Image: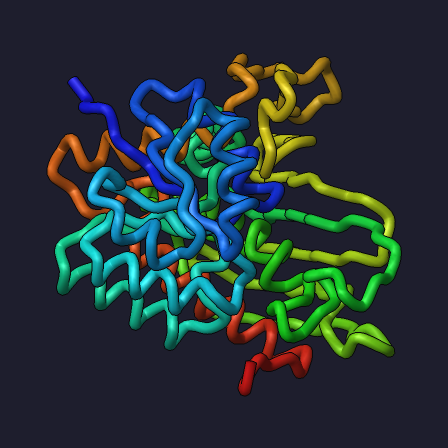
Amino acid sequence: MTNQLHWGIMTTGVIAHKFAADLLKSRTGRLAAVGARRLADADKFAREFGGARAHGSYAALLADPGVQAVYIGTPHPHHKEWALKAIAARKHVLCEKPLTLNLADSRAIVDAARAQGVLLMEAFMYRCHPQTAKLAELVRTGAIGELRLIRASFNIQMEFKPEHRMFNRALGGGTILDLGCYPVSFSRLIAGAAQGRPFADPVEFHGTGRLHPEARTDDCAVAVVKYPGEVVAELSCGSTVTRDISARIFGSQGWLDVPTPFFPGLEGRTDRFFLHRPGGGAPEEFSCESPDALYAYEADAVADALARGEREVPHMTWADTLGNAAVLDAWLAAVGVNYEGI
């Protein structure tokens, strides 16, 4: 039986609120404390979620002996600093994606977690959802024949606001790190499933993109990737194009249409995906009913791994995180984006 895990949440932004709300619905989690740069913000957050302890600094949160695991939801550039400090404090770490701004920094965090013997997971919440497991199973068992092509997109249309984190270079802005990481991780998962493995790394990569004329961060990017087994992936992300958040997986004997690959079950939806076979008949429909608790799945995955005595979560292992970071590095370099000096 999994023991209850006492969480501390670092920062009080939108995603932190969603994680805290979903944690109330988890099998294993309890919100013990929240830390913010201003005590007033932490106090307000704590009152919203059952009177958890409030700390007026991240350091105070890490010093709280009642916190066993920390969820880090700060802007991207702060992930490395606070993940390393949390690890040094012997707290288990669930850190929002991307783990850091580049492969070298992500490797430093993984090395620190290994040395300290604490759990570390990059928070790709969709990886822990039953829909994702079912998609991987269908590909792995040959439901669409031999895998040929993966198309995955995360595109949204936003009004340009230079101070918004999506456009602000000082906040790690740009769509590749914030949105493109999802199609990359999805394609690596599905390509790996076709090989009977948890993920696959590219054998060939080609990327390009557009820099916003004012922000000089990437606001639209595409990539073509080849994986082992001659599997090709077309990936895209953008913040200034028509909304398209979807995935399609094509095989020699059918294809999967996935309308909600990255946020299944959000807001209590019963999301569906479809298996099409040659001949044009009605597709087979799959649904994974779940409560509005997408982030609870990853909190439970962390607690379950700890209960087994593990320091990696199978849904997103350290090797998987580093492989994802390597692809993102290559994509950023192809577009001409770097975050040196921030």
